[in-house]
Image (cartoon, rainbow, N blue to C red; front, side):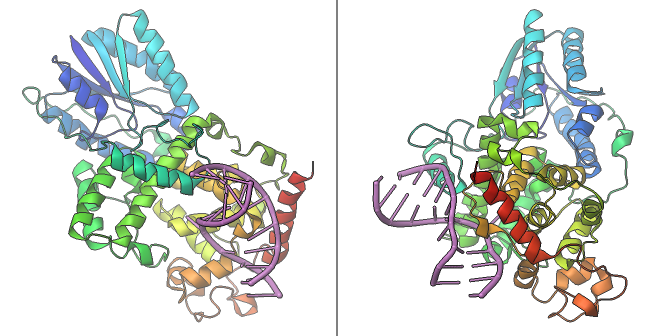
Amino acid sequence: MTSLVWFRNDLRVADNPALTAACHDGGPVRACFFITPDQWQAHDWSPARVQLIHRHLATLTSALAERGIPMDIRTVHTFSNSVEALGELCRQHGVSRVHFNEEYAVNERRRDRAARDQLAEHGVTVLKYRDQTVAPVGSVKTQQGDPYTVFTPFSKRWRAWTEQNDCQPLPAPGPLGEPVSPAAIPAVPEDFARDVPPLVDTGEEAAHRALTGFLKDGGDRYKEERDFPAKPATSLLSPYLASGILSGRQCLQAARTAMMDDPGSEGIQTWINEIAWRDFYIHILYHFPRVSRHQAFKPDTEALSWHPAGPLFEAWKAGKTGIPIVDAAMRQLRETGWMHNRLRMVTAMFLTKNLFIDWREGEAWFMQNLADGYLPSNNGGWQWSASTGTDAAPYFRVFNPVTQSQRFDPDGTFIRYWVPELRDMDSKRIHQPGDGRPVRYPAPVVDLKTSRKAAIEAFQALKKD
DNA sequence: TAGCACTTTGG
DNA sequence: CAAAGTGCT
């Protein structure tokens, strides 16, 4: 009896519940992964993310092959084609048990139900595991038994849960038999072939080196420096997390180990909170599936009349809004497939509050460009910025991009790097160049003061009905 | 149930 | 330092 591990968003051999379970079945184990370019296109996956996954598949296939587990990678079109292909693999190899780790967005859940039903007809047992979060979805609830909709109380309960429950990562399974020779990897689908430089080193081992390296060298500075885009103080682990090359449990475990060397490190505590943010938004997506169907977390905000995404949206995407910090960030995104988290909030607020353009437009653009594009986090962040999402969002949370720029890029280093037109401006004026700007750099496409006021009024008008 | 918390701004 | 909304305990 052969067991099959269906890899999806869990591209690692260590701490992989589905893989570990399959290895305990006692028989031969195979693995599979489906490249679904049409589905990925529909989900706005970026070339940066797809290419990262593609490079990674070679190392994953080798790691499995060394353990005697052959990997089949097939290119099909959509999720439903992947379900058909899964059935074929099961027939071809006489598979009796299929193991996979759950995903929570609606299309993924529909795919998994279809797979379960189809395989059941052929007498194949399907086993699924909770894997995406540290605290399993459904485990962190209010005293009333409801899901949390606000981060801070969630994080308190999440911390307690992670301290009281076992969330140790699983070790990588040992070899099951003689190594096999790794099969060839299909080419990157054409739609995702745009040339983008690799953002991080490839492979699970590289991810773990990055994790321990960050905690050792940067953990301490994290709290003070993480908000400054010109300082490389963030972990840059998100591309690994987004595709399951690293798990949240592994991050938490490593953070705890680092804390033993440096007890009370506020930097590492702060970073653990970021792991909680990731869990929070996955829990939100699980409990409120509408957020993965292009709908607002707060339904009443669907009544807002966003401005059509015309030339101002193009200016935002191109980094030509005339707001230096916004333009620097948008150029960083386009060129590297990554943007500093502080600037994700600044650019998202600028799009949704100052330009008053629908958060869904920005959400899609980020997904189309980020190497770490991950629906729960990206959608959660966008809806938070747009005030359509979680957290009580009093209107005074509208960022002023110039103020943010002065606070978090005080000497303009980050702006100068990404907006060379402004390289010669002094630190005082670079945040808001005004009439002294070089001719090649645009004037602001919107007035910050009046647009802020208009956005606040639009939100206030929602309450009146 | 009243008090607390919240990735802030503009005066 | 006031503006001033809402979830949670």
